[in-house]
Length: 409
Image 1 (cartoon, one colour):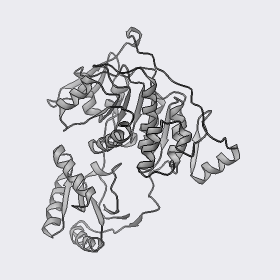
Image 2 (cartoon, helix red, strand yellow):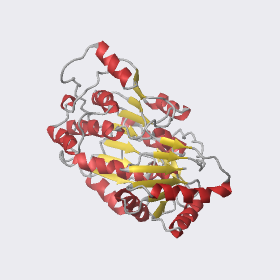
Image 3 (cartoon, helix red, strand yellow):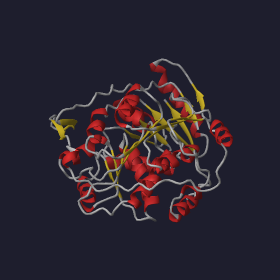
Image 4 (cartoon, one colour):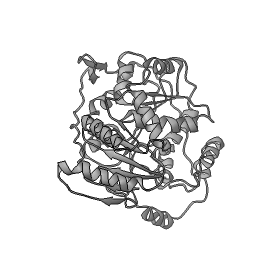
């Protein structure tokens, strides 16, 4: 994968702090009216008991020296007390045979470093913070322990809220998580639904009514369902915040705080982030208890050393001509996909028209596109049918694109 420079990254709004008192701020409705979630008095709520089986390591116990050398070789640092030992094979995890078989079928031969160390922490019921770059295997790091946790609980009934909740910043990432949840949840008969703006709200509502064990959601759409009493989080005992820094960067802090206020207080929280800004640190301090923090690599968002980066500093009027030259070079290579990041939605549309006029197969996504358009565009890009994707930062994190890929910014 190569990354070429020249396009300035867009700036995001600063996150706002959430409300308090008897109500919690959620979001603004389409009419501009502030929607509020009523704070829950948990002392008056009868809660379903949560089962947390004691985690026991399986397999050969390694010495402290071996574990220290392994963590050092994988650039893993640990903060927190009594961190469980990492695991090194799928069989050592204690996952059901159906899930282990699915891992093998998917082509995975061994856990990634974040999975090796993250799975034992999640399975032990501890709160945790995982700092790791995108593409390190975080999704399965929290999904598989979630499924094991769900298997231990009493069955959900119609109208019950989910047992596991996964929050993600964008609809594309949420749908990608759902694909993984479908693949690994099917063998163990664990149902999920994905809640996001632009999707079929009636279908999402029906899924919630019939009952699903896992809800994957963007904060705004979940707040819609909570404020309209279409679901509740009284059975939610496993919370995941995926790409937490990105969610806060997009201004979702009030919604996140409002959602957490609706979750039973004895839940387990797993927060995943690529960086460690002050806003994430505040959220951790406010909501995580006795947590373990795993860092894989740097706390700062750093370039992947496997990526060739070429920075071309140029004037604004030079960019289109330079882009045409770059595309001729890139498209001469077979099976190469290209993502072009642009700051504004209008500019995305303009550049897409220019690229297609030049004869290159290109499609675009941004926040004003319908969900069907965004889904079709990503499907066409991933399949290679349309090898050029032009996008705002909605595609900046967490999305998978196989084969050789160039990114222009």
